[in-house]
Length: 311
Ligand code: BMA
Image 1 (cartoon, protein in one colour):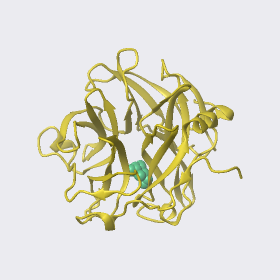
Image 2 (tube, protein in one colour):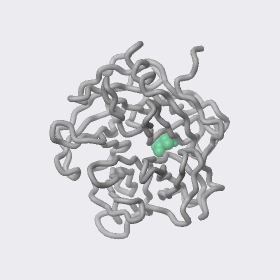
Image 3 (spheres, helix red, strand yellow):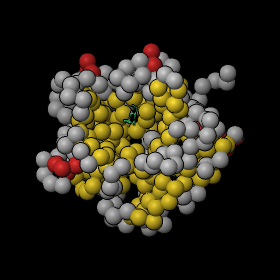
Image 4 (cartoon, helix red, strand yellow):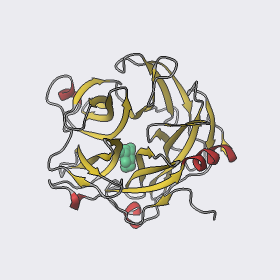
């Protein structure tokens, strides 16, 4: 087997429930961004009600994180968020745009799961902006710049008659989104055949937008969550240049194989560094946070060398 394209950090897992100064059952599926020269991680935790909140941890090197004493985002108490976040907030993704960090997260309630948008200038205060999808949507990532005058996002609506696929939408104000279309679908009898969803917010490269996504394969022993890569056209990200045929990361470490939900690696964040590498962050078995590194150009090559059809 060829050398692995994602190098796991030797100190994994990097954050667990034992590191959190308030009672939680899990630490996983975190968004990560650089702010003021430091790494900020917004991580999801299950409480022992089975519902989730979002905490914050900080780091100088991207691997050693210290959690703040209080959670960062808990279900909203003001309408309309109180109605739609009553069952918890999950899986934050962070995109810096213009003057603020925007956070997309799953808002769960008796009405289903939809995506909410919040923003913060400094990770001290946080302000809710809007609920930006109806139910049943998850896995929404916003591109880090406007393209052709509009904000762009990828997301994953639920569907009964088609395997869950990746869609693109556009907005001029980040609140109202439209012009939606499907851009990428699972491939039958392939590691991502059951469903796919955006993972980390896309990363700009010379050859296209790098989209690190998750794919799910159903087995007799439950579903396996893995990560793959796709490359979107820079000027028109609805056009997919290539999708890597093989996964780039699958559950292998003990804390990825066994946990709250076994056999899961799930990403909400990849942080590009100045040296051409990125740090990739993923939840292991919905219970702990893990990190690794990859060379961005290697991931782009991986898409182009042996592509599978986007649809
Ligand atoms: C998905 C989401 C993720 C989770 C994954 C594996 O449907 O709920 O938050 O990591 O399942 O359990």
